[in-house]
Image (cartoon, rainbow, N blue to C red; front, side, top):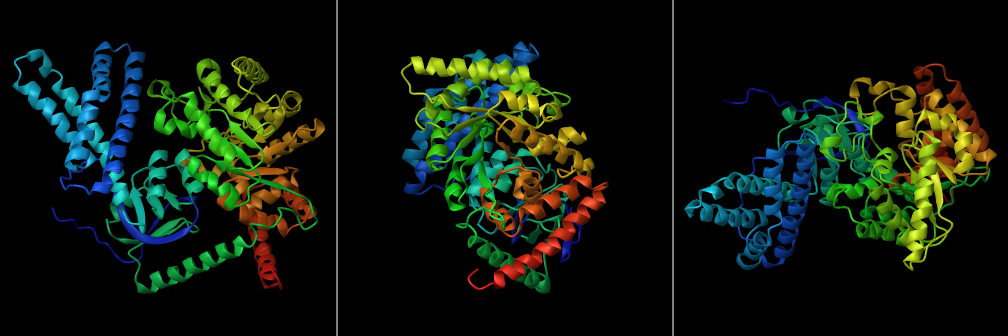
Length: 595
């Protein structure tokens, strides 16, 4: 049936801005299936990439099948478990792996065709045999084949999109965001998604503007449409006419000019008008981002998120060596500055495996609760950190997530001591000055900050979860997203209490949540007494610029006003007034000779 929908120029769809920015590009609809096999041979120099795609798909599908096996185990479903175990054996079959790699290498086949043809050889062999019991394996073979082909084709489809692409999809996973970023995608528009989901955090880290919760993007946008993603106004403009396109081309140019202006700030010190020094550090998720530490002059890593290691490997296969490599990269890319490594923070919206699904995961089995239940995982991670820390003495800080009781923290401290001793006995140098810190993200910790500050070496405030738990607002629920207010007076009071406790016991207090990335919020935090802020590296210059144009007195006044705001409307008005004043300061600064 012919599509009767009209596709008018300048049609607008609204959503929520997960990552701000302004881009114009060609829309590409991205779905996760129904792609045909491409029989076109590849060039000689493409072979290594096709072999890599196959291996990556094999590893990824193995993790997927293993998770399904765990699920079957939890339900005591022996039949399903046997089927899945059979599929795992197929994926690990050395003859199959040799066959696929051989077809790529010897016959210049694309990875998906090599997989398809290799499986077909097995299928034909079984069909022609008189061993009827083998016929039961045909469905397993076809299922594994299809999983592998789909996985490979997703990677290939993304890689084939041009650098002007704005990806349009129903929803997006963290791994897909990384793949989009590595292939130069300019923006992402989704039907669904959460503002503080891991996918959004990663898109922010990668600098890809992202609009979520549009509900209808994949129905309203056609593949090949020109689309403007306007993150500042929370919308996308479809098929712009000449006049609208011209307006946005000029706006994009202005934004690029502003970014260029910010580059002048990069090498300047992070200090206030009155000379107060502030430490601006980097939040790092992936090895690719480590180069940004030097690029944006971050003073070390305030948050190294190790949970991203699970995306490709899964907890079952995440080995100590891989963790050591990740830490090594982080240390070597951050000069002589401190590196704060957060222990695995899975659970919540970062599912460990299928059988851990809970009715209320954010209040459930997550963060340190999992690590203390699965001590082998905790010991493995601590050993990886201790082995690398010994090579960089005096630089390591370990941050413990989702702490809600002092008992949990003391238990981690005990396991760390045991691990240090065990590593040293193996003849590996250790750092006896590793600092162990508590992540303040639960009201119980903020309320008892004085107690925690007596036992911890430092405190670091995770504003995303602290906001969620203080205001009882699910950070991923768009129905109540307007209530998610990280600058709510209650949240600011908890932050002030943490700073007070840290000052009393001479322990540093940092903020590593996304709130630090916002210049206005950064000034409020500094006004409350926070002296270390950690954020997405590319956003450091804009925060530094705001810091440099204000005095401590101004920031304290701002913080006090925000704490005293009675309504959300008053908070919004304070921010709007500040923005207006800040624009004037910026204008004056940029016209100043020598600036």
